[in-house]
Length: 365
Ligand code: SF4
Picture 1 (cartoon, rainbow, N blue to C red):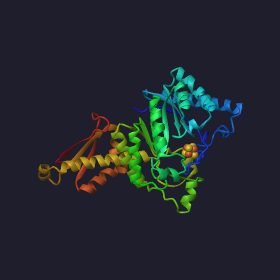
Picture 2: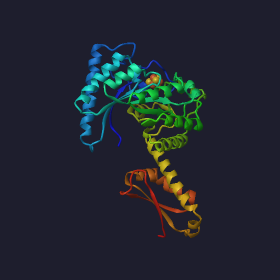
Picture 3: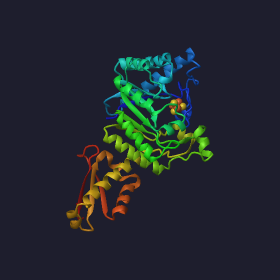
Picture 4: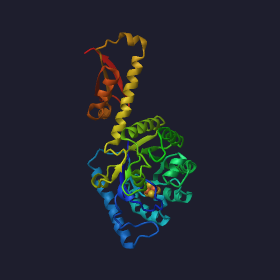
């Protein structure tokens, strides 16, 4: 079961980089504490305001959680900038705000995101001391050229080393990948996924690159130097990537950029495969591939091939919770199956089927 995550955003804070695609102020919203940045230092007043804001946010989420079925695990997650690029003092200050919730068992653990090149042993010790359970590395790609052109500032070897260190220290490792950056292609992305699998992460996120206004990537897009993925391509790549990760036992916890208020209302995405239900598009694609493979398997059996009357229907039984993925948006998967195989198909939910399990039968009516 997915943990119940309480997100605390620290936009662009602590990050001395400017990756080609990033404008954290847009993707996670402006910093409510007057853009306190690493290097500028936070005033005491601002620190107090922030402490209250973060505590209030946690309380609100815990209130909201009371109305939901009990989750197995509640996590406070620091998102936005690169947590481990903050000074140790600033990290300690933020962790100290979250710590009482952990000590009182109101939440079960903490989660942070980090750059692969900003994760020293000293820092890992600090995070472990404060009860951080999960460290998500913003890997984006394991291709040298893609990383270089995206101005990420590290090489694939660094990712391998840091991932190993994170696991050695006993943290759950998360990997974030960003298909479709400059010079990326499907083959490179699949290789990136394979390398991610080799690092044995606990979970992964796939965020196809989108062009956000005001970023260097947006300039390159305007000049015709950068061409983002089409939505269809991004869905195809992510379906292949997610299937491979899941086969290796890695949980895929998010696909596609969160449709935050900033993006939705500000219209800041200039181009690229942004879709508010991107994850569902990918899940539907995976479901379609699964049903197609099952039908082809069935059809390719010689004995059955000769005995299935032309007008028989094929009924897929799928888990109740996954019905909408199997049917696809506006029943699109059903139409695609019928178009590909020139047969009649039905997709029904079955409450007895476990996650990811499907069955197929043929009927004559
Ligand atoms: S390291 Fe992260 S926060 Fe910093 S510029 Fe790159 S993507 Fe943005």
